[in-house]
Length: 332
Ligand code: SF4
Ligand code: MG
Image (tube, rainbow, N blue to C red; front, side, top):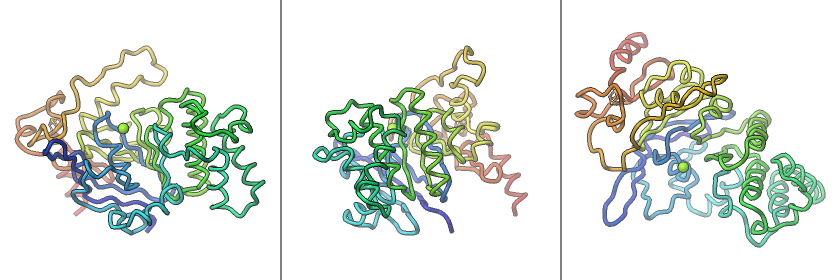
């Protein structure tokens, strides 16, 4: 059993103004050691809420863990106390995301913070840790790393803090790394360097990575499997090759058509018309119906189930009922 993370039927609600609505609706997935799972979808689809839940960093209230389990190495973290979670975070599970200020200590220099992480995980002297930290800072593309090593977080620009946080997140050699749009704000050269670092970490230490992004180019480069989320639900899951070669769900197809093809950068992009529905606004039927070019009567009358269309490939769409039945016949 090499599943590092296994989420089953996770349901997250939000309560505001006395109303409660579901933002993550019974999602299930797993990540194995050494594997990168990409999580894609427009903003407002529940990707970040899912990531925060895994770290148990979701603010409750307004968030509510309404059902399901989040098993990390076979233990349900939803049952763990905050004290236990603090031991896991930034140690076995680390998270890198867009807002770095919250994860950096304001009163300890950047260098001392990374040293601490290194010393906790390796047998080394303080001098060796310092050398390692400066090297990490260099690897995430920080110019004059010796100087930055002695700085406090507030003295740095947003982009610089972002890179320091990534250096820390990788220095601890986590078993599980959750990256939520970690490089979105950075320029392409730095982004490429950081993605290289993450790949290298995965190869060296067999880290499991959950990689949240809206950039399908990055997904193609980084991920082994991909989970597509729409309006709080998983609408498609497949290995990265199948997803790009044979996307099933109309939403996934729309996402793929909205990115420029390699070698065809001038081709006009076709954005998906319309918007992600507000949580709770669609009570019955497919949440994508208002934007779907293939919408049928059944789509608005009945919730599409997540169907197995082939080995390891699922789609939540009524179009694939026949395909799923045929696949079922081959497996039983
Ligand atoms: Fe489109 Fe219907 Fe499939 Fe939803 S279930 S994606 S509306 S075809
Ligand atoms: Mg987000």
